[in-house]
Length: 293
Image (tube, rainbow, N blue to C red; front, side, top):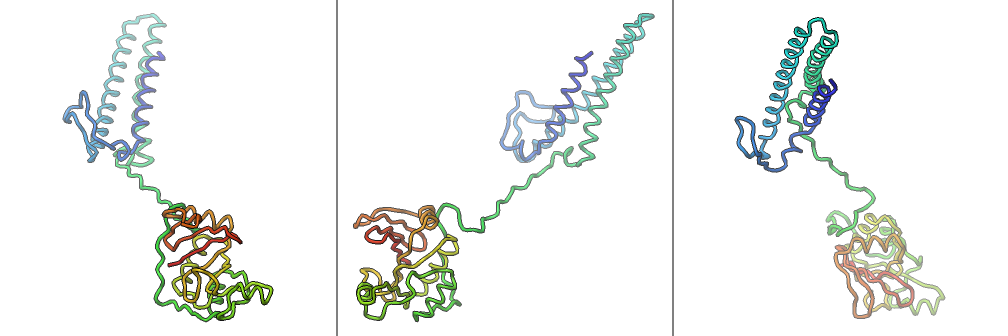
């Protein structure tokens, strides 16, 4: 009698398995049947027909289970009537009838359980919404970063003290507290004073904003080691060019957010980002030479 139990158990498992699959998962593409159910064409599409098709399958399955159970009950009844006084035959007939009734109850119970949990499980109209992934708050992932736009309402100053205060408010440091005097190169100042100097006065507002953008997106230490002081080839008054001190976090961020890279005529590696070109210069003190145009 275990064969009959197995049949009903397999039917129950199939019913539950298919019923738990939402139609938007099943109906991902057209499907052509070798032998379709009555009332359906050979091909069903993903336009919602699959849900109706499965509903028809469930209806037919329950009907077949009822018919099969009825036949088993009839066979068991005949077997019991013809058993006469044979206890073994009567016991077998009783078990057949019991298994048939229990099997039918199992199928009907499966339908009732699903309907009780959620009627949509029976209608096969489940829609599973796409899971949104929140953007990280600590900075962008690998890939090009967006082009920053300078807000018109933000005022950027050009006076040395004011620019230093503005950059300090952004969390951007300057390696030398003393700016270079006007018309005195940083080389001359080092020789005369025995210490270094770094200027940021007249640094264009757009360059200040891009440094702020860099600090916010990278979340790393940003230290200016060269600014608008004279004595550089490409730096100078009102030029959007600075030198930055390298560190592992800044270095990784630059490389991971590049849009292109290459080697310049001096043999230095450069990385183009939306906020400017970052060139790793290794002559003397290693630093990032950054053009923020």
